[in-house]
Amino acid sequence: MTETQGKNYQREKTGDIFIFRTPNFSAERGSVLHSGIFNREFSSALSSLAVAGLAYMVAVIYLRKGLLPHVVFLLTFVPGFLFLRKFVFKEKLMEVLFDRHAGKTEIFIAGMTRRKKDSFPLGNINNVLIEQKKTAVVNPDGVEFVEKISSQHGMPIPGFGEEKIFFLLTLKLNDGTDRLIFADSNMRDVMDAHNEIKEFLKI
Image (cartoon, rainbow, N blue to C red; front, side, top):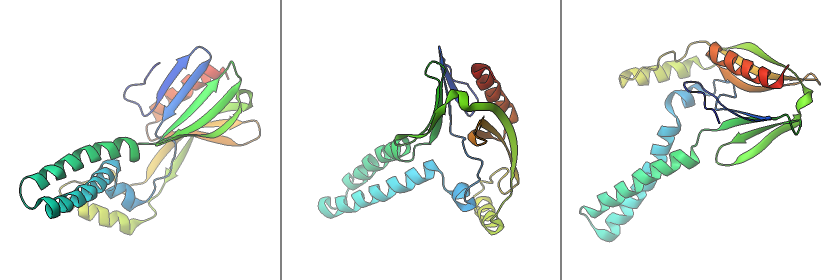
């Protein structure tokens, strides 16, 4: 197994099997407000805080005031945050499995569960290409709001609200369709992944 350090993807090669994993399998910016304010850590903390707050109120009702309700709060919040971050708000990964021996390609999405998204013969891959896509901000009012909030809290978000360029790694199939398997703003990383996959597929 080989993990590519410092890159937004991992690769694993064993004999005739090559597995490519990445959390970057979409070139969509998503909601400005969501991506600017909410993230997995914040969502985990907010959810855990709600549960811990409820546990605290129950503890106050049954145990009265004192140190114990605060202990209940901490014992609920900290493990709750860690659990939610690891299992509920876990980062989704795309896993692409190239199997030369079986002559097949399978694409999975792994999050809380692992499900197969696509499957097709390895020989159907006609080429592996890099394309470029520019994404413009579609919610300027949202950008202005987020920038105002972040500056008020002394936490500016570098590059937030700017036009972004993605480099897309796609599998071109014989039927004219394609499958996006990697999208990143770092062209060098996309080129490295492109070269490794093409070398394995020998195309």
